[in-house]
Image 1 (spheres, one colour):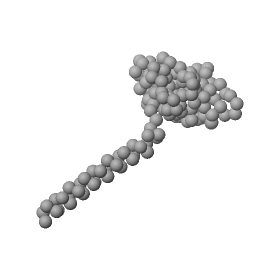
Image 2: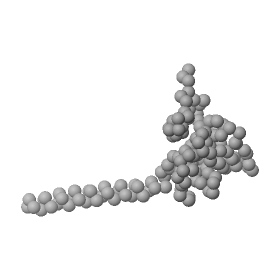
Image 3: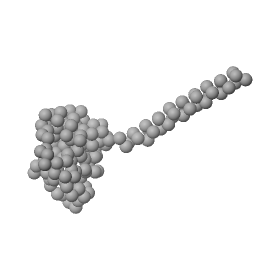
Image 4: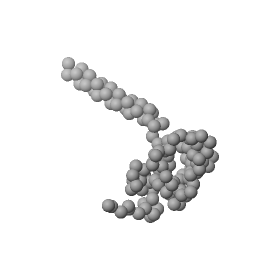
Length: 148
């Protein structure tokens, strides 16, 4: 009788462990397309993404680079002060999108141009996305904004 109970407990523990492993694998498989890695322009140039890879590109909108095309298409360049990546976006830009401000774009490289599907911009005059700040700090060009 004791041997049967012990065997049943071991079977339940093994089935629970296998169920846990299966659920982790399924969650990882489901999230494979939902994870977008952040890259700065210098990282994109030094280690180009795979064709069709969706990622987030962040930096500053280069001064004088914004040009409006046909309809809702907008072209501009994102820089991290070391490298520059041309970006095209078709859609409505956020109200706070401006030259010289921090921006994060989600999309993929097509040729030498980043084709964005989503643009995120700052929300006040001192805000910059965390990834952009970290990237600029790595290069030693980030300056803390003055506190009021």
